[in-house]
Image (cartoon, rainbow, N blue to C red; front, side, top):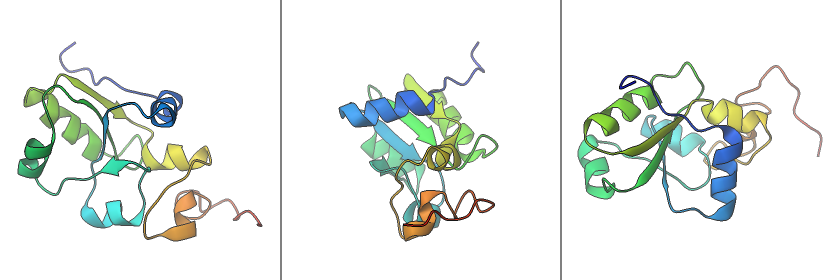
Length: 128
């Protein structure tokens, strides 16, 4: 049981964001990835020291990255648990799952971060 990663699905995460729940949504990718596209309300830490300064052991924390195969959020999850953070979950679907549902992304990628092109390049962009 100690090796099991606790997860959160897209619908629960969306509901938490819509309600304005008090939790930390941490994107576990490089800074350039965070700048390009992220779920609104996300935070990013460049170092574990920075994360340690900002996160409280009592915080509810959700980590994510690009998709289920991306290991960045798995590593972040393990580091947080091993460091004594108790209320941590992983949104395994990440950016690709979020975008596939048509939910908004923010970042420098602009319209290409909506998922129509950035993550789902096989589908044509919707005509506006």
